[in-house]
Amino acid sequence: MNWPANTPQSPDDVAAGIVVAEDFERFEQRNDVFTRAFWDERIRSKQTDEFFNSYRMEAAPRRGEGFNQRDFALRNASWLISDIISDRGGDEGKREGFQASIGHDTPVAPDQVEVDDPAAQSAEIKRIAKFFGAELCGITAYDQRWTYATRVDTRDMSAAPNDVEATSVIVLGHQMDADLTQTYPSALAGAATGREYSHEASIVMQVAAYIRNLGYEATASMNDTGLVIPYALQAGLGEYARNQLVITPEFGPRLRFSKIYTTIPLQHDTPKKYGVAEVCNICTRCADACPVKALPFDAPKAGGNQSSIKGVVKWTSDAEKCFGYWAKLASDCAICMRVCPFNRDYSKASNRWWLKLALSPFRKLALWLDDKSERAKRKKPRDWWAGETK
Image (cartoon, rainbow, N blue to C red; front, side, top):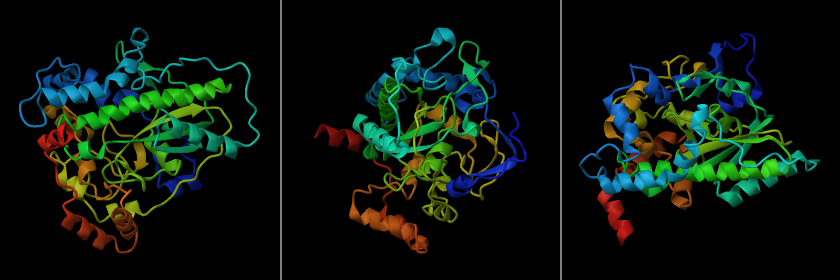
């Protein structure tokens, strides 16, 4: 559906760096490139089928370092918990966590805990999220623009209703393993992605269950129901980058995000501008490193392709090229994450110093220092295995 053309930019939009154009339309989940691989003959191929089958070891692993059976075995094992959750609801056309929200495993308690102080309740939720294992937690208002206009019925890949009951969205951040991500592109590196999908499935379900036990609606969500990046920006967790990732001051781009739609009264966080966009304006390392040139070299703009949201001014990838390369590898690729100058260990004082420099007017010096450091160099999968064995 078209969003009302007269809808003005809100102050939070501006603060979050979100620019919505007059022709904005809510996204149809059926058009995301992974879902298109099941129904769109322009995307689906023998390679894409083998890509999905490789996660069940139904396709022979590629030969070569980082793509042998041991690498695929670790990657696929890392996805196990997420796979168990996503396999639920198939008879109803729901792939939970991907094409449908995660079903309630506990009911909403009939008696509500009274919330007199939304700020205190927000602090409590953040503490609970940390207790269950989330590295980051931010809270923002529910925004219908980011809810998929329709979800996907996985029985025939048709559009299905996508209803949401919420006043707030809790956004959780889950850090990917730094050493594994340095081995991208490889099936071994895919274990960093899968591990966090499994972690976030557990964490988001537990936090949602806690809220339901307080007597309020809470729906656990991963890649389903709506876009998470705008919510992460609105919740002040980070800033959008050229590589299509959210850059956070704690972990750079090395995060996965999940979310909870809820009705419990909460105080909302505010967006923050860190200065990431100013770095991305002069840095094209991710676009330079992309093997299929799927990332943009130019300025943010509205438009894109079938698998990108219409009417949002931003850096947009060529999803078809990107996923085509994934299919060729039979695993995910995050070279753009590995080479990003913000991909650092910020527990180290030297990297915190570098971040301060990068977010200052001396950002060109920071980028020069990053190039000299060889921080972005790919780690050989054999070295990761050797290190773990020792």
